[in-house]
Length: 147
Image 1 (cartoon, rainbow, N blue to C red):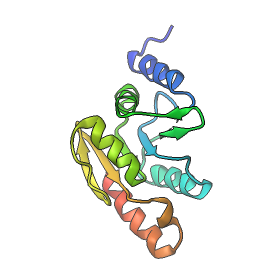
Image 2: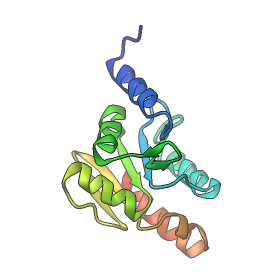
Image 3: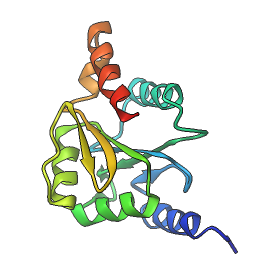
């Protein structure tokens, strides 16, 4: 039996949403995305999390739409509160709208936000920013606002 109640809650959320969620109960940075991320985008986020010192294996990824179905706003809120990450990275406008609905507050795109004490950076389209060095720098500039 686990002695850390936060770890138990995180494990429960990971099990409940296993078709939509990867990570560990100790993940400190949650990425929310409409569809699975490309390898390039996921690698960029992992390297950014390491550079920003979010700890070992910091990244958890919640994919809203999978072949098993789509998450709703309440599901997203359950995932966020169950994993209790330090910060969120919302990588597309669809995911930002769902987070906005889940928390009943606007999440501004391409900007830093606060959601129940957590820092949130929300991109309109993170994948699109992986195409040119200049756009990658724009993405990095927003990611640095997490700390």
